[in-house]
Structures are given as structure tokens and as C-alpha cells.
Length: 152
Picture (cartoon, one colour):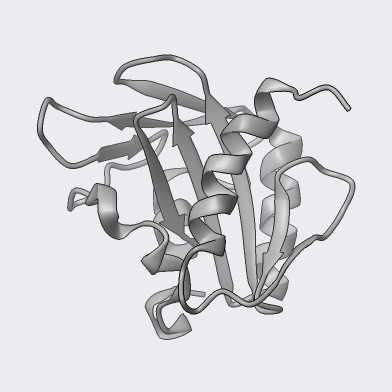
């Protein structure tokens, strides 16, 4: 089977998750590429951009937002992993994601990840900017923290 570019970027996420001491299982959960279930209880959505340097502007279509919103209603632990070229992975929990974009919008939404030289990730969306920066080494540990950290 021929390797596609998306396999390389999704592989960056999945290989780091599989190396974590708390990792036990990974399952593809539906027909959408990039939708996974980790350890039977954590839903994961992966998007990537091949752009080499900051900033990365991730666009979310109305259908993508509807799909994600449906899962957020059903699951406590939900993460969006944004693969920023070959530089970093920005993992957003359910609460962070909801603060950045309007999932009920009838228009496309966006999340921008900026990484200043030597700095942490600055994340802003269509509706807000995260108040704090995200460390590069917060992924994949963030996925395995207590679900209490994830806001419903």
C-alpha cells in the first residue's frame, strides 16, 4: 500500500501516544479519517497542515464541527490534535476547543497556532484566544490526565 502524506502526519500523533506509559489501545471509530478512540474512553480528532513554519491556520468546516460536536455530547474526554508541520502537536481538550470556535456556527471557523522562536504555542480561534500558552511537551501527557481537567 502506498504511503500517503496524511499517514505521516497522523503517525506523528499516534506514535507519541503509543509510547506513553498509560497507553493501552487505539481504535479507528468511524469512516472519517483522523477519528480515533484511545484507551476505550478518549476520543481523538487529528488535523494536520504541512506548512513548515508558524503560524498554522486550521479551518473547520460546518460538517466537521457538527461531527465533533456530536462526539462532545457523548464523551467526557475529547481532544483535538493539530499537527503543525514537522514542528509540534497542539493538543486541545474539549473546553479549550469550545472556547476557541463556535461549534454551532453556520460558517467555517478557524484555529491559528503560532510559535514564536524558542517559545510555547499561542492559540487563537474565531471566537477567542487561549489565555495561556501551551507547552510543546504537554502532548501526549495531556490526553492521559484526569477527565476532570476536560470541561463538559
